[in-house]
Image (tube, rainbow, N blue to C red):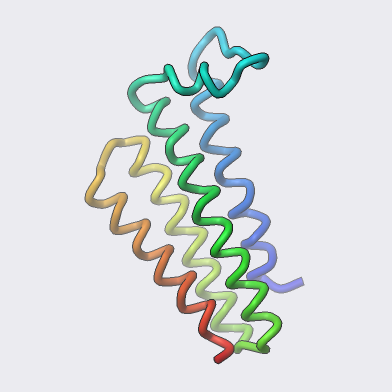
Amino acid sequence: MTTAFWCVLVAGLLPIFSVTLAKASVKGYDNKNPRPWLARLEGWQQRANAAQANGWEAFALFSTAVIIANLTHAPQAKVDTLALVFVAARLVYIGLYIANLGVLRSLAWTVGLVCTLTIFVAGG
């Protein structure tokens, strides 16, 4: 299995990591009604939950790009490197989101998006 495919797995787990931070840091988590409970969070816990939502959004395009790159026989070393940078950018993004550093967070988001788009067209 390629490094990029392993990165798809990690990228798919990152939103779960983000929401786990939000859930574990506040007492009284309501597993019967988790979405309304999460919607009432404030501060960094709310931002961790928002990072979860954005993580799922980013995952869809990233995972598709990796699959398309594989199908089009894109240079594997390039795809692997870009996938690793994507995962690193998403980890930084989560930390910056939780820390409420919006401009830097947007920069990390942009790095991830550029990696995804580059992977997408790498086989062309």
